[in-house]
Length: 131
Image 1 (spheres, helix red, strand yellow):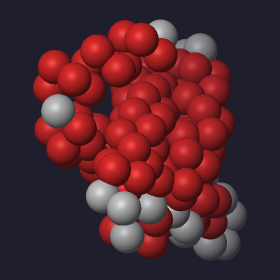
Image 2 (cartoon, one colour):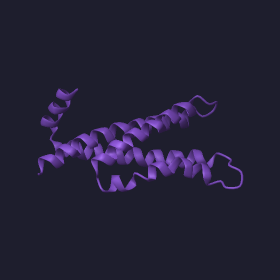
Image 3 (cartoon, helix red, strand yellow):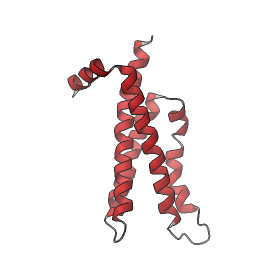
């Protein structure tokens, strides 16, 4: 795997790969937020209808400064958190009538995981090379 990544870096260039990974992170992040808000709106939570939305969205929003600041370590931690959303998406997909929503959530969380891991690697190597 390491050799494959190094060959890919030599073939495409570190700057190009970092930008592609960042685009994947941003796209997956926004898609996952939209899906979580959409699924949260469909849930009934008694007196406060915003509670299901906040419970689902707040952990992702905590990583927004790391995404905006382009910090590799924050992206690595976000990759681990995205696995929780992947698990949630798989569980939601098993519910009757929720297969599409759960599947989209799982796929977007998997895209976020992949993008974050690649971005953390490529960006940290990019920062080391610029020193």
